[in-house]
Image 1 (tube, helix red, strand yellow):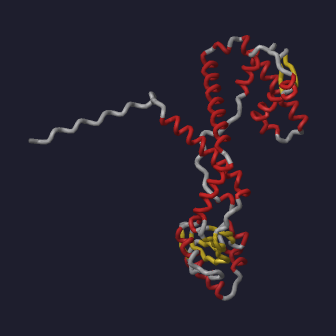
Image 2: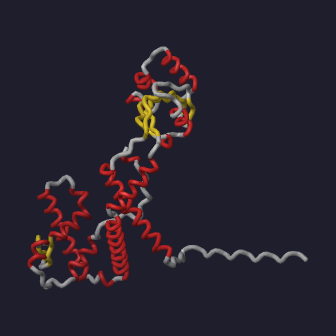
Image 3: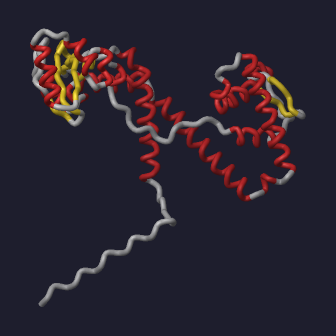
Length: 298
């Protein structure tokens, strides 16, 4: 039920993590003689040094966000070793690239500009999204959604799906003779629900194709329909139960609502920025001006 509680807005560009090439460049470029207070050292301890360049716990966390998916099956100790090795290789390779003057190339500069802009965008969207997901905002979305759901009906039904009307009529005849609907569905239905005896669970009217829903919601509990044609074939429907739509408690859908609010905020930020910007497409031909209409004949 909770997965159908509401529909999420299309997400903006997916939030990605800090890019490791940028991290490597920063680690190599920054002076390493900066004084750090004792509390900061304790909060972010040095894990290793590579030719004098420090790798801290926070660097491991960033590296795990970047490559952690490939290390899921490793033990914590092995994962830590892999991450330290990955960062060490990154620092060493970055230093070698500097010696070859790669950072002076225009291609590298463009790439770094892109990474900087991307990281700034992600930081802005993430910060603003988190700030928008207040308890008040989450409860407002929940309350608005529950108002829309209030009074909606749900039907619990089974069905048997076949290709032709003749098959559907033959199945209906067997049901009228006393055949068990669920057992007949397992034997004859061509729908994926056949293994469950044609059980579709509870659904609202808008969750089924119109022809199917119109019949299902008219039937009373325990009734079986005549053959019903839809785009999928011919159905025999049996209504098991009818009830008011069940609204999940707030705590069950809180995480979904939080995701919705955050994505909505991100989409609104990007839309607002676009509205206030001048975006020119130089790769597309300029639209030809509309021809001047001829003067009316005298």
